Length: 155
Image (cartoon, rainbow, N blue to C red; front, side, top):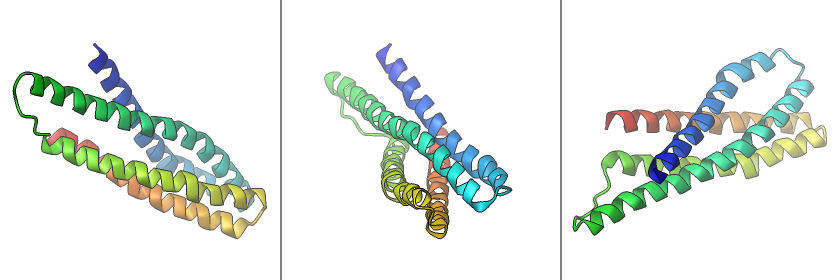
């Protein structure tokens, strides 16, 4: 029962994270391009601030629940006298997941801080540059997230 609850939390956190990146990249971003630059940058700083709080929680939940599930399976196999060898898909998922969290932390604590500060001080060229960097790294993370899903389903 606990395993099922943690797996559900794991999957819902991934859905929030990847779905949010897809929404922001393919739907929100094109829509806000119609706004004046200052309004667009203020809106994106506000939206991303809210989204990044949710992703911070989700990414940490993904790590904790993923590690717990791997540990539980390893413990059960070990207690049964077997030798645990992590499946290739789990290894790929784990490595890419940790990489995604590291990239997100850079986005959240470095790039978003630049965006927030630039918007606060109305340095719009710096805000636009920070938002472009965020967009690039979100694209990388989105690609990695989709790759994790594909690997999990295929391998």
